[in-house]
Length: 364
Ligand SMILES: *Cc1c(COP(=O)(O)O)cnc(C)c1O
Picture 1 (cartoon, rainbow, N blue to C red):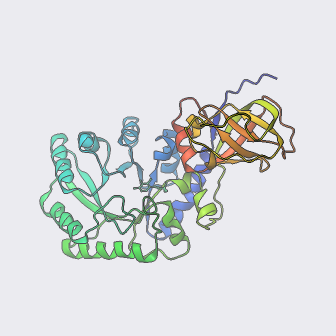
Picture 2 (tube, rainbow, N blue to C red):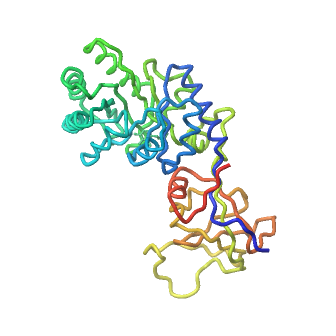
Picture 3 (cartoon, rainbow, N blue to C red):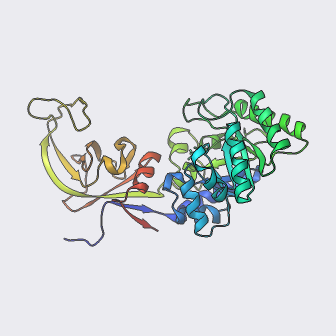
């Protein structure tokens, strides 16, 4: 049978993303927390951004300024937030297309002020405080406070919107009541020095949600930057032991087509040297087994291990740039060449699949 659908295909369920976002936004609202909806994982896709806005996110945010620019040019009125420290080479675009950015360098902030003057713009700055994960942010509290005071007292176009922190990225440091409390204490110190409340005290991303749902989020955290939990909802239930009622984890489905099925030995035949990655993998001899070949590969998803077959009897055996080998020996559905195999996924394949021009997208 010849089918008309084209593969590989990534199906994206917008309504389920909306419902996930709604649950998170409402929970945050109960705790006086605004949500920045992060769109970097879906290549800034407008249709996804629209759902996050509809669900009540206060800001739309990305680490890639181009994605925010695209939304602005399409007429989106929502406030935009750049969540990667801006490059010196993008400050003119920054003040035109982002309302807020996360920052940690005084000289860069000064140059943002200059760019604001040139384009007659206002720009909000959130100063990042590194409480231990060791990626971005001031590690020295005093330095952060001095920078906050400098912005407050000397800059006309750059506004001090608040402070924030980032966790579970480089250092694998878990968000806890203690390390987020440190951020709120610093926010209180700054509030007393400047005589007004900071609008944003941003307490991290998806991995800070377990604290919120367990009732351990310190008072004073007023913003979270959420991507994964709303888009995929895989990390919290599978890795963080946090099952949020009503949340979907079937928002993204990858569909790939079988191009070959053969009973093959499991141990390669001949003199073993290197695979396509230049590595020497270890192979286990399991005798002859039924193997299927799929027309999709590392070029599309990069990390095979982060794919989750819907058919639990499928074993992912290996992949190269354009091929994926699966073991279907234990499968009960009698796969044939031309059949479609489906996968859920973790964050990194979602990111790569969304970015691939070779993967078709279908929005539901
Ligand atoms: C990507 C990112 C986030 C969002 O992370 P999720 O795990 O997708 O919620 C938040 N803050 C910063 C600085 C980021 O780079």
